[in-house]
Amino acid sequence: MSARVTESTECAETGKRCPSGRHADHDVYSAQCPCRAMLDLLANKWSALAIGALEDGPQRFGEIQRTLQGVSPKVLTSTLRRLEEFGFVDRTVYPAVPLHVEYSLTVLGHSAAVPLGLLRTWVEDNLDEIPEPAEGRPR
Amino acid sequence: MSARVTESTECAETGKRCPSGRHADHDVYSAQCPCRAMLDLLANKWSALAIGALEDGPQRFGEIQRTLQGVSPKVLTSTLRRLEEFGFVDRTVYPAVPLHVEYSLTVLGHSAAVPLGLLRTWVEDNLDEIPEPAEGRPR
Image (cartoon, rainbow over all chains, first blue to last red; front, top):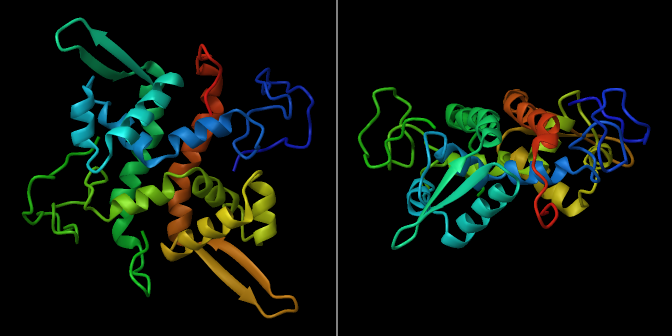
Protein backbone atom coordinates (compact mmCIF):
# COMPACT_ATOMS: atom_id res chain seq x y z
CA MET A 1 0.00 0.00 0.00
CA SER A 2 1.51 3.29 -0.99
CA ALA A 3 1.96 6.19 1.39
CA ARG A 4 -1.07 8.40 1.38
CA VAL A 5 -1.70 12.03 2.21
CA THR A 6 -5.46 12.00 2.23
CA GLU A 7 -5.95 14.47 5.04
CA SER A 8 -3.88 17.25 3.52
CA THR A 9 -4.46 19.55 0.61
CA GLU A 10 -0.93 20.89 0.76
CA CYS A 11 1.06 20.90 -2.42
CA ALA A 12 3.42 17.98 -2.78
CA GLU A 13 7.11 18.68 -3.08
CA THR A 14 7.29 16.15 -5.88
CA GLY A 15 5.46 18.42 -8.28
CA LYS A 16 2.98 15.63 -9.03
CA ARG A 17 0.13 17.36 -7.28
CA CYS A 18 -3.21 15.74 -7.84
CA PRO A 19 -5.53 17.98 -9.87
CA SER A 20 -8.34 17.08 -7.47
CA GLY A 21 -6.72 19.47 -4.98
CA ARG A 22 -7.84 17.14 -2.22
CA HIS A 23 -4.43 15.61 -1.56
CA ALA A 24 -0.85 15.83 -2.73
CA ASP A 25 0.13 12.83 -4.86
CA HIS A 26 -2.25 10.63 -6.78
CA ASP A 27 -3.87 8.05 -4.52
CA VAL A 28 -6.12 5.20 -5.66
CA TYR A 29 -7.57 5.01 -2.16
CA SER A 30 -8.98 8.52 -2.36
CA ALA A 31 -12.50 8.76 -3.74
CA GLN A 32 -11.66 12.23 -5.09
CA CYS A 33 -8.50 11.30 -7.00
CA PRO A 34 -9.00 10.96 -10.76
CA CYS A 35 -6.87 7.83 -10.71
CA ARG A 36 -9.78 6.01 -9.07
CA ALA A 37 -11.62 6.13 -12.42
CA MET A 38 -8.50 4.84 -14.17
CA LEU A 39 -8.19 1.96 -11.72
CA ASP A 40 -11.87 1.21 -12.28
CA LEU A 41 -11.21 0.96 -16.01
CA LEU A 42 -8.06 -1.18 -15.84
CA ALA A 43 -9.01 -3.34 -12.85
CA ASN A 44 -11.72 -4.90 -14.94
CA LYS A 45 -11.84 -8.37 -16.44
CA TRP A 46 -12.65 -7.30 -19.98
CA SER A 47 -10.13 -4.45 -20.04
CA ALA A 48 -7.41 -6.79 -18.77
CA LEU A 49 -8.27 -9.33 -21.49
CA ALA A 50 -8.70 -6.79 -24.32
CA ILE A 51 -5.37 -5.09 -23.65
CA GLY A 52 -3.69 -8.49 -23.55
CA ALA A 53 -5.34 -9.47 -26.84
CA LEU A 54 -3.83 -6.43 -28.55
CA GLU A 55 -0.30 -6.93 -27.22
CA ASP A 56 0.76 -8.88 -30.30
CA GLY A 57 -0.49 -6.27 -32.77
CA PRO A 58 -3.57 -4.53 -34.16
CA GLN A 59 -6.79 -6.49 -34.45
CA ARG A 60 -10.24 -5.98 -35.87
CA PHE A 61 -13.32 -6.01 -33.65
CA GLY A 62 -14.32 -9.52 -34.68
CA GLU A 63 -10.86 -10.89 -33.95
CA ILE A 64 -10.85 -9.40 -30.46
CA GLN A 65 -14.34 -10.73 -29.84
CA ARG A 66 -13.28 -14.25 -30.80
CA THR A 67 -10.25 -14.02 -28.50
CA LEU A 68 -12.29 -12.75 -25.54
CA GLN A 69 -14.56 -15.77 -25.45
CA GLY A 70 -17.98 -15.01 -24.04
CA VAL A 71 -17.85 -11.22 -24.35
CA SER A 72 -20.96 -9.63 -25.80
CA PRO A 73 -20.62 -7.14 -28.68
CA LYS A 74 -22.17 -4.46 -26.47
CA VAL A 75 -19.72 -4.96 -23.60
CA LEU A 76 -16.73 -5.18 -25.95
CA THR A 77 -17.79 -2.00 -27.75
CA SER A 78 -18.10 -0.19 -24.43
CA THR A 79 -14.77 -1.55 -23.18
CA LEU A 80 -12.87 -0.54 -26.32
CA ARG A 81 -14.50 2.88 -26.35
CA ARG A 82 -13.44 3.60 -22.76
CA LEU A 83 -9.92 2.31 -23.42
CA GLU A 84 -9.78 4.64 -26.43
CA GLU A 85 -11.08 7.62 -24.44
CA PHE A 86 -8.41 7.10 -21.79
CA GLY A 87 -5.67 6.80 -24.42
CA PHE A 88 -4.87 3.10 -24.06
CA VAL A 89 -6.19 2.06 -27.48
CA ASP A 90 -6.10 3.66 -30.94
CA ARG A 91 -8.97 3.05 -33.35
CA THR A 92 -7.88 3.38 -36.97
CA VAL A 93 -10.34 3.45 -39.86
CA TYR A 94 -8.94 2.44 -43.25
CA PRO A 95 -10.93 3.53 -46.32
CA ALA A 96 -12.42 0.42 -47.85
CA VAL A 97 -15.78 -1.08 -48.60
CA PRO A 98 -16.81 -2.26 -46.10
CA LEU A 99 -14.84 -0.03 -43.74
CA HIS A 100 -11.76 -1.66 -42.28
CA VAL A 101 -11.37 -0.73 -38.59
CA GLU A 102 -8.40 -1.78 -36.51
CA TYR A 103 -7.71 -1.43 -32.81
CA SER A 104 -4.16 -1.18 -31.49
CA LEU A 105 -2.39 -0.39 -28.23
CA THR A 106 -0.90 3.06 -27.75
CA VAL A 107 2.42 3.50 -25.96
CA LEU A 108 0.42 3.98 -22.75
CA GLY A 109 -1.58 0.83 -23.52
CA HIS A 110 1.60 -1.19 -23.98
CA SER A 111 2.82 0.15 -20.64
CA ALA A 112 -0.43 -0.80 -18.87
CA ALA A 113 -0.23 -4.23 -20.50
CA VAL A 114 2.71 -5.11 -18.25
CA PRO A 115 0.95 -5.13 -14.85
CA LEU A 116 -2.22 -6.54 -16.44
CA GLY A 117 -0.22 -9.38 -17.99
CA LEU A 118 1.30 -10.16 -14.61
CA LEU A 119 -2.20 -10.31 -13.11
CA ARG A 120 -3.51 -12.64 -15.84
CA THR A 121 -0.47 -14.90 -15.46
CA TRP A 122 -0.83 -14.93 -11.68
CA VAL A 123 -4.43 -16.10 -12.03
CA GLU A 124 -3.54 -18.90 -14.44
CA ASP A 125 -0.59 -19.99 -12.30
CA ASN A 126 -2.44 -19.94 -8.98
CA LEU A 127 -5.90 -21.24 -9.82
CA ASP A 128 -5.05 -24.66 -8.43
CA GLU A 129 -4.13 -23.11 -5.07
CA ILE A 130 -7.68 -21.94 -4.43
CA PRO A 131 -9.43 -24.08 -1.83
CA GLU A 132 -12.67 -25.70 -2.87
CA PRO A 133 -15.46 -23.84 -1.08
CA ALA A 134 -17.91 -25.93 0.90
CA GLU A 135 -20.90 -25.07 -1.28
CA GLY A 136 -19.23 -25.11 -4.67
CA ARG A 137 -17.07 -22.46 -6.20
CA PRO A 138 -18.84 -19.11 -6.28
CA ARG A 139 -19.18 -17.25 -9.52
CA MET B 1 -0.63 -12.98 -23.96
CA SER B 2 0.01 -16.56 -22.92
CA ALA B 3 -0.04 -19.49 -25.32
CA ARG B 4 -3.49 -20.93 -25.54
CA VAL B 5 -4.94 -24.32 -26.41
CA THR B 6 -8.57 -23.40 -26.68
CA GLU B 7 -9.47 -25.70 -29.56
CA SER B 8 -8.16 -28.88 -27.97
CA THR B 9 -9.38 -31.01 -25.11
CA GLU B 10 -6.22 -33.09 -25.10
CA CYS B 11 -4.49 -33.56 -21.81
CA ALA B 12 -1.58 -31.23 -21.23
CA GLU B 13 1.83 -32.76 -20.70
CA THR B 14 2.39 -30.31 -17.88
CA GLY B 15 0.01 -32.13 -15.59
CA LYS B 16 -1.86 -28.85 -14.96
CA ARG B 17 -4.90 -29.89 -16.88
CA CYS B 18 -7.83 -27.57 -16.54
CA PRO B 19 -10.71 -29.23 -14.67
CA SER B 20 -13.09 -27.75 -17.22
CA GLY B 21 -11.90 -30.46 -19.61
CA ARG B 22 -12.27 -27.96 -22.44
CA HIS B 23 -8.58 -27.19 -22.85
CA ALA B 24 -5.21 -28.19 -21.47
CA ASP B 25 -3.72 -25.49 -19.26
CA HIS B 26 -5.67 -22.79 -17.47
CA ASP B 27 -6.52 -19.94 -19.80
CA VAL B 28 -8.15 -16.66 -18.78
CA TYR B 29 -9.30 -16.17 -22.38
CA SER B 30 -11.46 -19.28 -22.30
CA ALA B 31 -15.04 -18.73 -21.16
CA GLN B 32 -15.08 -22.28 -19.77
CA CYS B 33 -11.93 -22.06 -17.66
CA PRO B 34 -12.57 -21.59 -13.93
CA CYS B 35 -9.79 -19.02 -13.82
CA ARG B 36 -12.11 -16.59 -15.63
CA ALA B 37 -14.15 -16.29 -12.41
CA MET B 38 -10.95 -15.71 -10.45
CA LEU B 39 -9.84 -12.98 -12.84
CA ASP B 40 -13.29 -11.44 -12.53
CA LEU B 41 -12.84 -11.30 -8.76
CA LEU B 42 -9.29 -9.93 -8.72
CA ALA B 43 -9.53 -7.63 -11.75
CA ASN B 44 -11.95 -5.49 -9.83
CA LYS B 45 -11.38 -2.08 -8.32
CA TRP B 46 -12.66 -2.91 -4.83
CA SER B 47 -10.84 -6.24 -4.63
CA ALA B 48 -7.59 -4.58 -5.68
CA LEU B 49 -8.04 -1.89 -3.03
CA ALA B 50 -9.21 -4.25 -0.26
CA ILE B 51 -6.31 -6.66 -0.72
CA GLY B 52 -3.92 -3.72 -0.67
CA ALA B 53 -5.51 -2.37 2.49
CA LEU B 54 -4.84 -5.66 4.28
CA GLU B 55 -1.21 -5.97 3.19
CA ASP B 56 0.05 -4.27 6.35
CA GLY B 57 -1.90 -6.53 8.71
CA PRO B 58 -5.39 -7.53 9.90
CA GLN B 59 -8.09 -4.90 9.98
CA ARG B 60 -11.65 -4.61 11.18
CA PHE B 61 -14.49 -3.92 8.75
CA GLY B 62 -14.75 -0.27 9.75
CA GLU B 63 -11.02 0.30 9.25
CA ILE B 64 -11.13 -1.18 5.75
CA GLN B 65 -14.18 0.89 4.93
CA ARG B 66 -12.43 4.10 5.97
CA THR B 67 -9.38 3.18 3.87
CA LEU B 68 -11.45 2.37 0.76
CA GLN B 69 -12.98 5.82 0.55
CA GLY B 70 -16.39 5.83 -1.09
CA VAL B 71 -17.13 2.12 -0.77
CA SER B 72 -20.62 1.26 0.46
CA PRO B 73 -21.01 -1.22 3.33
CA LYS B 74 -22.99 -3.51 1.01
CA VAL B 75 -20.31 -3.59 -1.69
CA LEU B 76 -17.49 -4.02 0.84
CA THR B 77 -19.34 -6.88 2.55
CA SER B 78 -19.84 -8.60 -0.80
CA THR B 79 -16.21 -8.01 -1.83
CA LEU B 80 -14.79 -9.40 1.43
CA ARG B 81 -17.14 -12.38 1.33
CA ARG B 82 -16.04 -13.35 -2.19
CA LEU B 83 -12.38 -12.86 -1.29
CA GLU B 84 -12.95 -15.14 1.71
CA GLU B 85 -14.75 -17.76 -0.40
CA PHE B 86 -11.84 -17.89 -2.86
CA GLY B 87 -9.29 -18.18 -0.06
CA PHE B 88 -7.69 -14.74 -0.33
CA VAL B 89 -8.94 -13.42 3.00
CA ASP B 90 -9.45 -14.96 6.43
CA ARG B 91 -12.26 -13.73 8.68
CA THR B 92 -11.51 -14.26 12.36
CA VAL B 93 -14.11 -13.74 15.07
CA TYR B 94 -12.75 -13.03 18.56
CA PRO B 95 -15.15 -13.62 21.47
CA ALA B 96 -15.97 -10.25 22.93
CA VAL B 97 -18.98 -8.04 23.50
CA PRO B 98 -19.56 -6.68 20.93
CA LEU B 99 -17.97 -9.34 18.68
CA HIS B 100 -14.51 -8.43 17.42
CA VAL B 101 -14.10 -9.48 13.78
CA GLU B 102 -10.83 -9.12 11.89
CA TYR B 103 -10.00 -9.64 8.24
CA SER B 104 -6.52 -10.67 7.16
CA LEU B 105 -4.77 -11.88 4.02
CA THR B 106 -4.05 -15.58 3.61
CA VAL B 107 -0.79 -16.76 2.04
CA LEU B 108 -2.64 -16.81 -1.29
CA GLY B 109 -3.92 -13.28 -0.63
CA HIS B 110 -0.41 -12.01 0.05
CA SER B 111 0.68 -13.62 -3.21
CA ALA B 112 -2.15 -11.98 -5.18
CA ALA B 113 -1.29 -8.67 -3.52
CA VAL B 114 1.92 -8.48 -5.56
CA PRO B 115 0.43 -8.09 -9.08
CA LEU B 116 -2.45 -6.01 -7.69
CA GLY B 117 0.03 -3.67 -5.99
CA LEU B 118 1.90 -3.26 -9.26
CA LEU B 119 -1.37 -2.35 -10.99
CA ARG B 120 -2.30 0.24 -8.33
CA THR B 121 1.18 1.74 -8.49
CA TRP B 122 1.09 1.83 -12.30
CA VAL B 123 -2.18 3.78 -12.17
CA GLU B 124 -0.84 6.32 -9.67
CA ASP B 125 2.42 6.71 -11.61
CA ASN B 126 0.82 7.06 -15.05
CA LEU B 127 -2.31 9.09 -14.44
CA ASP B 128 -0.63 12.23 -15.73
CA GLU B 129 0.13 10.49 -19.06
CA ILE B 130 -3.55 10.15 -19.91
CA PRO B 131 -4.60 12.62 -22.61
CA GLU B 132 -7.45 14.94 -21.74
CA PRO B 133 -10.46 13.72 -23.72
CA ALA B 134 -12.20 16.28 -25.87
CA GLU B 135 -15.45 16.14 -23.94
CA GLY B 136 -14.08 15.83 -20.43
CA ARG B 137 -12.73 12.79 -18.77
CA PRO B 138 -15.23 9.94 -18.83
CA ARG B 139 -16.17 8.19 -15.61
